[in-house]
Length: 117
Image (cartoon, rainbow, N blue to C red; front, side, top):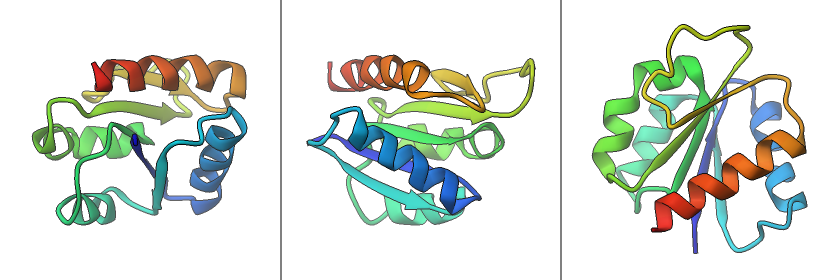
């Protein structure tokens, strides 16, 4: 069963992403929502690493080494409000906010497939 961890400083955004994943029909997963990257890293230290880590680009810039160190299979999707991000912060994909289901779904499915390969 895939594990997706969603990290956003605004728990409403994290919860919206979680709800969208369920709405997309991705039901055979476990989603954890954390308010910050350090809380997520603490959670990761007590369980298996996620297949997909969805976080803000700012969090990704601070924590990619710790996230990727848990498992080479972890894929990272960073979200940002930056119009043209200067870098990916170590993420596998960067998605600009606001985004809709039609943008989120193919990226999530592709990254999960890569993580499980």
